[in-house]
Every structure is written in structure tokens, then in C-alpha cells.
Amino acid sequence: MRIEDEIKQKKFRSEFEKLAVNLLYTHGWLINKHSQFLEPFGITLNQYNILRILRGQHPNPASINLLKERMLDKMSDASRLVERLRVKGLIDRKICENDRRKAEVFITEKGLETLAKLDNAASEIDNILGRLEEKEAEILNDLLDRLRS
View 1 (cartoon, rainbow, N blue to C red):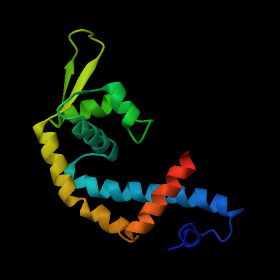
View 2 (view 1 turned 180 degrees about the vertical axis):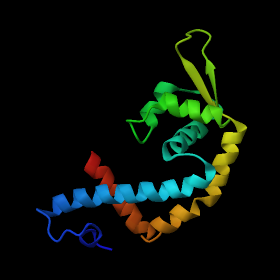
View 3 (view 1 turned 135 degrees about the vertical axis):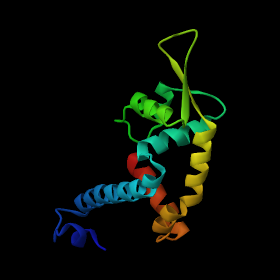
């Protein structure tokens, strides 16, 4: 469906304004789809992002600062997300012996198992994005990268 129909707006000031609105609307739409996908697993999109970062670091630890740097949502409170994941048993946090202000964060076996289940279920998201052909997705990725550069 066209963005004009989705938001009931007939005209935009320019194609650039339409693009900005379309990107913001699509971002919200995709966040909603991801949230629906993650809900049965009891984790949020930001928690999922933390788990994926930690899996990439595994078996090495990550600092809270490293997590903040790599997170998709830079406004998230990484410390709070880490604590919620620790309570769920998906990650472990150890205070550094050298510097008690620092913590090392590790993904647990349960966290790795949860991500493996999510990987298997991710076809739902792939099906949504699969409305584009792979070459179209590649072009869109290139265009978005260029827009941010």
C-alpha cells in the first residue's frame, strides 16, 4: 500500500518529504512486526539486539560501553537491559576485579539457545522482507547506506 493511502495524506511538499515520512512510517511498521515476532520469547527488540551483540562477542565478554556503541537504538539504557536479561538467565555479568566500576557481560547457554530458537523462527521476518527480491534488497541497502554517509 502506498504511503499516501496508509497515512491518508494526498500531497507532500516534495519527494524528499515523502521519503522522510515513508522511512519513519516504515521504521515504526517494522519495529511493530519485530515486536510481535519477539513477544512469544518474552524479550524486547532492544534485548534481542543485546543478545545478538553478545553472541557475536562469544566467548569473549563485552563491556556496557561496547554494547552501547553497537546497539541499534542509541537512546536505550544498556545497563537496565543487561539487568533484565541477567534476571531472565540469558546473560551473566561479572564485576571486573581490576576496576570495580566496570562489568563484563557474557551470554549464557540459555541465551545462546534462545537465539537459536529465534534464528529458526526468523523466517517470519524474512517472509515480510521477502516481498522484495534479493537484488532489490541489496539496492535498498546501498541507498540507505549512502543516505547515512
